[in-house]
Length: 273
Length: 258
Image 1 (cartoon, one colour):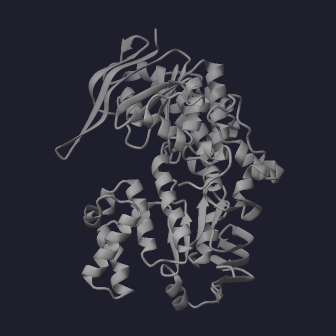
Image 2: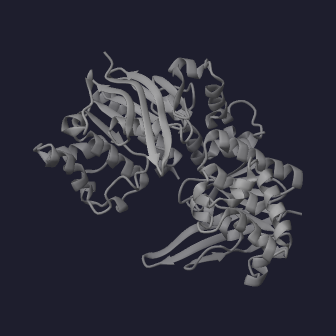
Image 3: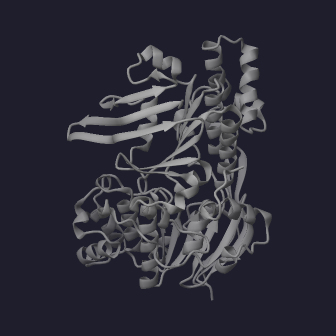
């Protein structure tokens, strides 16, 4: 049975200037695999990810024909039931560590907060577990990082702290929204390797949201390409180069490549679809 | 003679009694109408070199010459008529309460150049925007349109040199392609010299004739365009950047990152 099932998801915002449909009927199912969602800004990829946790603020509204996680209806679940899922069984890594970590709490306190409140662990046990989590994401001096405030960390470190925080409760599904777009390429490769190991070793499901088609193609098993709130193509990552939809092809072709021709890059014909 | 000559440039920031040596003994020269790229990770000092040329970073050693003349401090009008910069974030680099018209006319006013009306219209046409855009504010434009305005602003004084600091990294892939094409067309039309910074090796490869790889403020390696494509780099660090470059992920069978 699949871990997550989403049927005909729609996210609508009622604004002063009329109705804005951010997501217009997205369906997918996810097993214990790595699913990539790719699209440009405004394509609805982030809203799709947030809808799974019902983290869309009013005036945004989530509607769907069905949305189930491990057999449980998450479309009609109460807030209390959702809180039991959030973090514990479904984790989410946000895009920017600068805005997603609490700036006035040390990393250590943020990492142990959940362990102490949710799991009722003592101070020493919680600290030991938090340090182990930091080591799992390849932070070399976890003791120093525990004492640091978020502004004292680099972007790559902050991103790894967020991943560590999400992984402590051992979620069955992780939604990662552009987890590496603020990172340098070499650090990016390390973070992806960490996520990859978790999917393999723990059988975690992963939704990887990114604007970078090349990265998603290399890292995921399956890719959904979104444009204007719709999934325009669903394709096995290994066959991405054989994509049929003109939007996917356009996205692939407009990227420069090392050793590629110096001719003007092909640009997307936005009128085409 | 090279148009931009930088010899043993060092930049040191001092904060709270600590010294951060952002650039250490970097030398490079860029010929007229050449396109030169700087790559490296964050903190490698690549943007600081551009800022040092413009006088926006504390130079603690070395010389910068433009067209054989050492740059004056402060840089002054003659310098800005020759050298202009395009910044990374088009959301932050345009004045939010100035219309596009005012943004574009300001350099002309400062330099006492007349015929502003025609020049603003021409500048917008050059970067592929409709002339009516001059009456808009930056928040009424998309990211790609704003970066076009930033490029138009940099070209108002008809400089010979454009310093490009990650000009497309805040943009979507399809918009990036449009802006890179625009920059290449303008370089050919106006005979510009580019000094461009990017963390994306594929973008630098597409745009530049020669490339310098930086790490921790030091030069690691200078690579010619042909050598980059053929993977003829000599240092391990340059090779690791090349191997990690995202565009290589589409080559050959797709394997998960390990």
